[in-house]
Amino acid sequence: MAVQRLDRGDLWKNKARVLQLQLRQRFRVAVDRHRPSVLADRYFSSSVQRWLRRFRDFRRDSLPSSSSFYRKKVSKDFDVEVDSAIFRMLQAVAVPLIGNVCHVFMNGLNRVQVYGLEKLHDALLNRPKNKPLITVSNHVASVDDPFVIASLLPPRVLLDAQNLRWTLCASDRCFSNPVTSAFFRSVKVLPVSRGDGIYQMGMDMAISKLNTGGWVHIFPEGSRSRDGGKTVRSSKRGVGRLVLDADSTPIVLPFVHTGMQDVMPIGANFPRIGKTVTVLIGDPIIFDDLLNSEEATEASRGKLYDAVASRIGHQLQILKVKVDKLALEQSIRLENHNKDGAERAANILHQVDLDPFGLGSHEYIRYESLVEEARTKLNDMSPEEATADGYTRMGYSCEGGIGSRIRSYMDPTELMGFAARGLLMNCRSKEKHSDTSDISPLKTWKQYLEANMLKQWNTC
Image (spheres, rainbow, N blue to C red):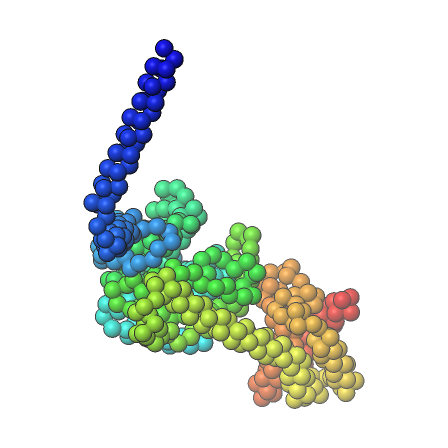
């Protein structure tokens, strides 16, 4: 029995070994039939790579990712809601009204000094028909637009709501509820969402305005300055897309301003008055050498966006240095003008003949000492105290009506000069009609001067 069992076991082992050899042989033959040569393997791998490339291109065109850049064409009638009849009626009323109010506020209650204003007017009024315009500037205060924009345009241009600028604003600030959304849409503001990239709907709406020959103003920095306008940060690539993806290359006009940090400081609820804003408008930025070069044809879309944004940011930084220099020179001239006021008043008083008023040489010496003391006070003042607000701290009180308030904004030496001029003219006009011994306006003015100004200067 044991011998039979061993024979059967060997028999099954032999059959399993034969079956194993047969399967191995068949497998080899099958593989050989499907793999005739190395050339077929290369053809198979190239076909797979070709299909993979087609799939990636299809995915890029249909579902673009945040890491891929391409030219996205936008039609002229992209956003019908903004161009509807209702919003056009609201824009025709709100834009001229708010624009003129801001123009009066900046040029009436503040002072705006502009360099190169003809460049903006030429690009806005004399550019070819359907030629788009993009203005770029630094962003210092929350009211840069519309305050600065309105201060640069004449009132007749502000009345034409259709040709005024479109601008972009973050949706979480300007479009947080239906009321603010309707208001900002009526003043030609387009919503953009932070973090949604450059292919979002707000950017497409801005490009559609450019395709119709409109004017778009944008802050390339993306947000307000974090150091009070002292520096200009690098530009975002979104401005590069506005330049490159428009149907025709727009005119890009840069300008930089300083002083808005004083008009609307960080944390303030209402704008200030009596401030000075300096604006410098540069030449249009040219991109022909960048777009028509051989490297541009081979470069990716993202690199082109970055190159355009870098050129715009570099130009804004150059203008920032220049406008700061102009503002400093202006403040130095104002300081010298205030210090020279005492000398001008003294020269006027030297030309006044005091004898017809009953004032002898001793009274004239007292006047000279008074003027000299005023001159010393002004020379000892720091540049910050030599401003219009500094004269208020010299002792002029705002109590006593509108006359006192007007005097609080005047240079004391200028006030003395005006009084001396009027006194001299009054003296000459009355010499022909009455005796000058009865005239004593200078005595009254002297008493007022000693009772008010001199006393307060001594207490400073």
